[in-house]
Every structure is written in C-alpha cells, then in structure tokens.
Length: 231
Length: 228
Image 1 (tube, helix red, strand yellow):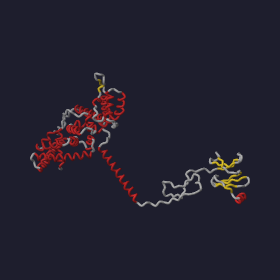
Image 2 (spheres, rainbow over the protein chains, first blue to last red):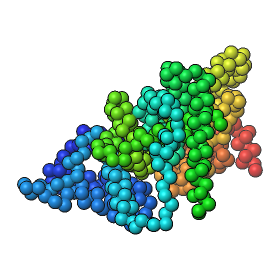
Image 3 (cartoon, helix red, strand yellow):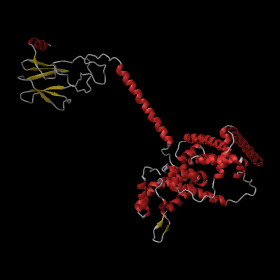
Image 4 (cartoon, each protein chain N blue to C red):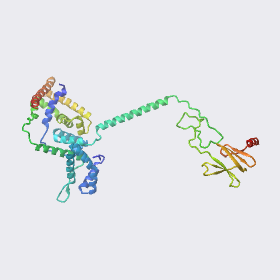
C-alpha cells in the first residue's frame, strides 16, 4: 500500500493479469501489496494474531480457493472495479471483515441477565421535544449537506474526535472543527426559521429550543443517576 | 447553556433516530475507498455521505480503513506545504530587498592594483597575482608558492667530453645538462638560484637564475675569489 503512485489503469491491468492466472502478475501483486496488507491488518485489529488471521483470510479470498465450472479460480479481486486505489480497497475489505467478525462474536456472547436495561431508546428523546420543534428540526437537518450530516453523526453519535473524522473525509481536523461549529449554528438558525414559518415568533422559538434542551438534560440525568447508583 | 449546547441534545436525538440499523444496501469497498480518497464526483460524494450519515456500519468501516491508511497527502500536508511556500516567498522578498539596498549604497573605492611589471621572468613556481577570493590583497603582495621544489644539486660531469655542467632536481637520481657556451667547467658552487662555475683557467661564470643566463665575472672578483 505504499505504491500509491500506481495509476488505476496500471492497477487494473495487474488485477486482470492476476485473474487470468498469470503467475508473474501474482508475484508482482504479492511483492507490492502483501507487506502493506499485513501492516494495515495490524493497524485495524491491534493484535498480532488476529491481524495475521484477518490478512491471511483476505489473502486466500484474493487468490481464490474455489474454482468455477471452467476451472478458473473465484477470486475476490474480480470485485475490484478501480473506483478507488487498490490499496484503499484492500484496507476497506480488511475493515469490513474485521467489523463483520466483531459483530458475529458479539452476537455469540451470552446475555447477562443482571445487565441494566438499555436507556438509549431513540424514541425517548424525540418524545420530549415539542412536535413543532421536532418537525422544524427535522427539516433543518435535511437541508444540511450530506457530508455535514456525516460529520455531525460521526462526532455526536459515534463520539469520534476531529482528527478521526478528518482522516475519514480526507480533510484537516481544523476544517472539521469549523464545519461542526458552522453546521450546529446553521441548524439552530434554520430551526428557528422553520418555526417562524409555522407561525411561532423568533423569541418564542428560541425559548422553545432552550426549554427542550433543558428538558432533555433533566430527562437524561433522571435516567443516568439510577444507573450510576447501581454501579 | 449556550446556543450550541441547546441544540446538541436535539441533534443527537434526531441523528440517532435517523440511523437505519437494518439498512440493506451498504456501500461497497471500492466506493468507500474512493470516498476516503476524495475521487468521487460531487453528486456521488453527497449521495455516499448521505448514506454514511445514516449507516453506522459503513461509518465504522470507513473510520477503520482510514485509521489503517499510511500518512497520505491530506489537507494538513497541503497546509504545511503552503507554509513552506510562504516562507520561501518571504525569503526571496528579503533577499531582493537586501540586494536592492546594496545596489543603492556608494560603491567602495577600488584599490589600485599595482601592476607587477617586470622584465625579469617570474621566479620558478611562485605566484604574484592577487587571488580572486581575497579582495584585500594587492598586487604588490607575494604569496608563497604552494609547490616547493627540492634544492637542486649541481655537478661537473667529467665522463663526457668535454665536461659538462649538470643539474638535478631529483636528489641526484636524474641529471640534466646546462649549457655553458664556449666554456669547459671544472668546478661548481651554488647557493639558491645563484650558481658559479669556474674553468681550468680560473674564469668564473655566474648565473642568478639556476643557469639560464650566464655572465662572466670581472677579473678583480675572480682574483678575490681565488684569494679566499
């Protein structure tokens, strides 16, 4: 994955040669991508054994352990379309495989009967908001750019820091910080705008947002305190 | 509670509500890779970003893949490159100002170089001109020669007929004859570049340039020499 300079047509040619069973192409592919594939697996899994297992599994899929009716190997490489770099594609495959395994393992874990009930029921929060405010906010959120919604979701839902989001989008963290601030400001402004359109005055709209925030905060505290006491 | 804090609970609530846990059409690896590398066109990027904002599975995949990526030329590096470019530009400006300032200063009086005019040939392996890298030196100064030559040896080669005066610069390994027209040397004495040769009759020739030019010494001098 250090061969970022390889052009997409060159990479596609290499991939096609590998798919056609050209052994020299395979050797080139191995020489170029295998070491980087293992280091990417290590970065994702954070554990040497798991990383090797993950990379070996993907490597086997790429080479193709099964054959079709014509005796050709069925390789995962056939799904590479050249949309992104081969390096990025391999990293994403590793990440997908890691997440799939993680989720499968989580499903297999026995449930703890004494575990506290889940409190982050989404409906609990939307119930608190005034329906007029809910509708106005929903419209305001829909008006944001998809990328801004993604930034907000990654920051406020997934609790990712600015640097992580920056890496996801190929942007600097200061840009992400600016966009987070701008989007939240814009959301508030647009929400007030939509509330005003529905016949609510500016002052009342601002009070509605403030009251709702206070209510949610009280609501959250009410639910978190018993959990803290239980711990 | 500031305006941003007011909006956050509502935002979290709506974002959580907008998540689709059972979403079927996930982004393929190629699309996610292209998204991270910013190679999708604007319309598709918006579409993918819209999906990502609702799909935690794809967001997690993208984040993990991005975490495993080696440092790539991101916007941050462009910032750094920009800083370097600005620094380089500033350096150029400063250099230009200094150069312009130096041009406006009154010219320093040029030292009159004394011509080293001499009819005599320059000494062997010595250097009289001022070197270009040292403007303080004047033409009158003489720089010591870098190469040193061993003191020449002199001899009269009697094995030849007639006997000849010879000089050696190789400590006696090789010898070269020195012409002494109409003169048969019998003995030789030397001090630096000065050489004196005498014949059987007592005539003395003197050379001050290692035997290139000769002159006959007057008899009085010859007398004094023979008297020593």
